[in-house]
Length: 471
Image (cartoon, rainbow, N blue to C red; front, side, top):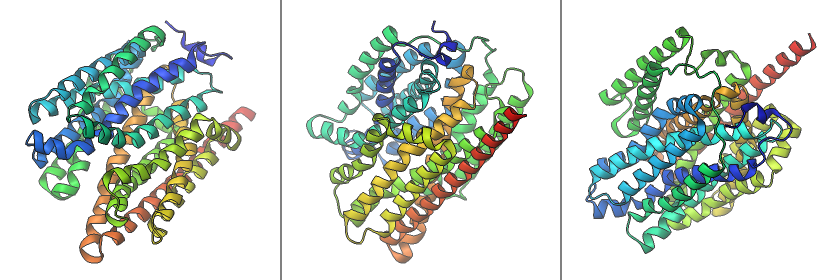
């Protein structure tokens, strides 16, 4: 087993960069599946006879299970071993992909997608946790930057890969293509990734895991159901009430037991609170705005699905170039975390405004906006993730990664729901273009607010820490 304290030495793990490549491969597999299914919807509707409700559950079964299990998966990784959970996640994801690719009915595909969600939760939490263990504190920002760049890469190539596969093979191929990647990932993880876990081995918080899973799944379900069924419908209000009650019970339980899955004392740390606040608002604004962007490219600028996918690529490519080259980590090191987050989110906000207001001449305004958003993401997202992870003890890295993923799921889902509602409210009265513009501007305000608020809280935390050191 790799000694966790090694990550604090001057060298880190001797094979850390190769290991990072392995865990990024595992991460990419999950991220591709988040986006690739959308392009297969027409084929699924035709070949499986899927109705609208079936399609919604094919998409939502995965996201609901994954978002509900992120905290529990991170806690399990800390207790039982991150390498073990990474292997389990890859295996479950591979089995789910096989069943999905060979599914003969919508029910089988929905069940397979739920199983893939379990594997995805384990993978998303353990990859970031492992990265935090094997790198020195000085190298962690660059490593997290590369990890974040893989997220952007999955966003960019998912629709393109899905379109290519559907043009040459049947719909099941979009799932079966995961199998060779999973097999390669399993071999590499077994051979290269070191085992690490919480040396104290706290007792498992089974009730906390149950409450967090039910509460988060209910909350995400209420958010994604709102636009379709109405925010005041019985389904949405009832599910939201369950989420509030269960999550309230979770918070009470975690504050009372000696071995909590999520230590609520973390929220007393201004660094942690600032990063959490910024993470929710950044994913709220960006998740909703990028949801509107695909419609903007197709319905306002008139591009087809493949053309629209290609024209979103500059955003992801900018993130990939800046993070893989180490430029964003270098800038963040010079500017400091608060300024990096503020600068990144100002750039992202400006990009959203550019897309909303400068598209009259065609794609040029959108391209400028995508480049600004990409540059902002490259600087702000790794700084935000590092701020969250560094505010949590190393032995709780899995829980920290789970919380980071949970915040992203929550903010993204809320952004799509709220900005989608802004679009719906504007379309009947003033038209689609105006509705998309309004949604993008709301997203820009949320991102800007998140950046300034997170930077202010983090700056206060740094000043407080420096005063303690001086004293």
